[in-house]
Structure formats: C-alpha cells, structure tokens
Length: 177
Image (cartoon, rainbow, N blue to C red; front, side):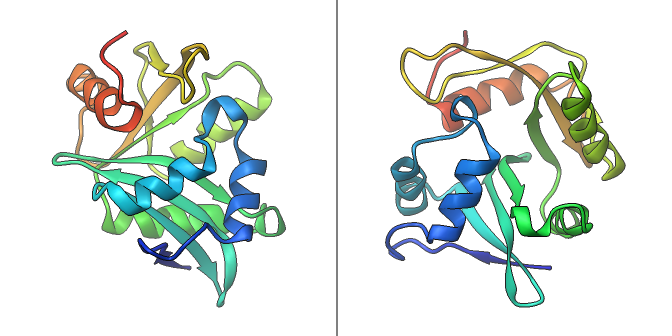
C-alpha cells in the first residue's frame, strides 16, 4: 500500500474518490464534497490521501494533523478491495508514520458497528468509554452519538476534553455542545 496526497489546485476530486466517499459514509457522517475540496485548498492541517495497492486505487484516508495528535476523519477501502486485508494493511502503514491517532466510530450497538470497532482494536486502537457527540456537518442536523478511539502514545481518557475541544473547533467549526 502507498498513499498519494490529493494536492491543492488539482481541481475537483477524482470520480473514484467521490464514489468511495459517498458510498462508504452516510450523509450525517460526511461533508458536502465541495467542502472537502475547499479544505484541501485552504486548511493546512487537513490532508486527503488516495490509498493505492499495486498501482491501483484502493481507498481514501482523510486526516487532520494537530500539535499533539492526528485525527482520522474518513477512512474507507473501495468496494472492490474490501475483505482482502487492504484496510488493515493501509491502517497499519499509516499508523506507523502518523501517530498518535484519534478517530470516531459508531457506538457498539449492532453487528456491523461491533465489527468496525473490533477491526480498529485489532489494529491497536483503544475504545474510549466516555460519551462523545459528533457535531453535525450541516446546519440544522442533529448531533450524532459516536465513540472516540485512540492509537499510540495518547491517554484519551485523560486528554478527552482537550481532544474534543480541538475536534469541535477545527474539524467541525463549533463551540462545546
């Protein structure tokens, strides 16, 4: 696996990135696509990377680099590459170079959410038991109950409030709920 950043000034997002993004995340868990392009152009802390496997498109990973941690906003493997170990390999390679990491995931309420949490736990992430609400991406939408997970040398429980404030301020552009 290798990672190729989508560069500022590259124009609209490639169709295959757009398709994976739209298929992998429900509307409440994604930005409008033009806002992703704006972040690439205007926000130095934000990076969108194309994941490649054997020189073909495999998925996407977007993240924010802050002073004390990186936040994975979106991570998805293209439908054609799922269940082949690509996700685990990509996440392992990314975590080896960018850490400590924080990400959001759905609470463990059904088989699919439990499967996602276990995927991240197998990669070395720890589930934080503290309640967390994701601010809405769109004005008028509801706050979404999610969970935070961490990887690497970071105590999410001890630093929870500071991490939440950072995410709310920079990623979502809101004050505390």
